[in-house]
Image (cartoon, rainbow, N blue to C red; front, side):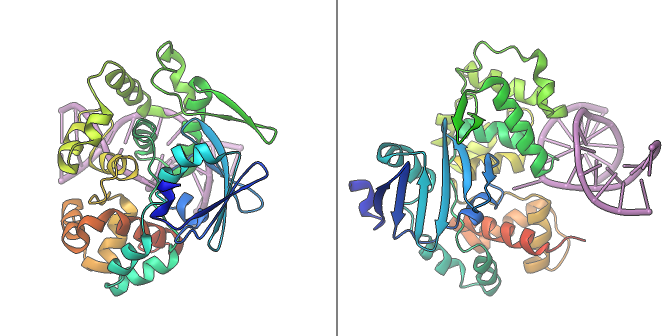
Length: 298
DNA sequence: TTGCAGGGGTCAA
DNA sequence: TTGACCCCTGCA
């Protein structure tokens, strides 16, 4: 299989799914709990049930093996290989970032982080909901939104709902959107849907732009400021030279590197100089590290 | 039990 | 530069 050549991954078909061998730098906990995506449930066996690209899968990592259930070779090739960014050698990224002692420590905590290649549309709405919000609330709102407008999928005696596509929303009536409990963000969601639906906002086109231009475009959507735009760029448009700065990133960058209170702009400038094209990866390792250790929390 | 601050930002004044 | 904003939790 050509797409696997670059990665040395061996795919074995097992009952109800696949077992991947020779997968390096992959830890399901690190990947799903580093704040980049919201649509997962942690199961009792430490596996993660994930809803993405209209599918439900169950993922479990163990050393250099990764088990993905409720999938097949075809979906792996067409969706999950890219979704999990399996063509990228994270060890090289980690080596490069580890030249910095502080980063070396942060990486040790989140050594199995990979930046998922998520759907730009879902990422846009999800991060609009994330503004001034807490993770459990964000996840709940996205789930309610999906329940209202998405498609049901049964898996293991549970019902999951896919994130609605623009097409799913074409007939939708948003008079009851408040019941997804996104509060003041509901009006932003409706406007974002409208802009994408009528072509005023073309996410694929934005994806092909350079980060700085793409950020400018995304910010035209109400509810999308610098931070939300940067999350969309990093988590769904492969703009790895971005460094989304939220309160956690502000605190940890101040504490570990700048050693003083700083403005968001100063923090971005610092990241650009220090981490360059790897800023996005550095951001994820630092974010996970900061939250695990509650670093910088006053 | 009730009340109040504040959260993975953005917007408008 | 500052306060308001939905909704909910944690904590007094």
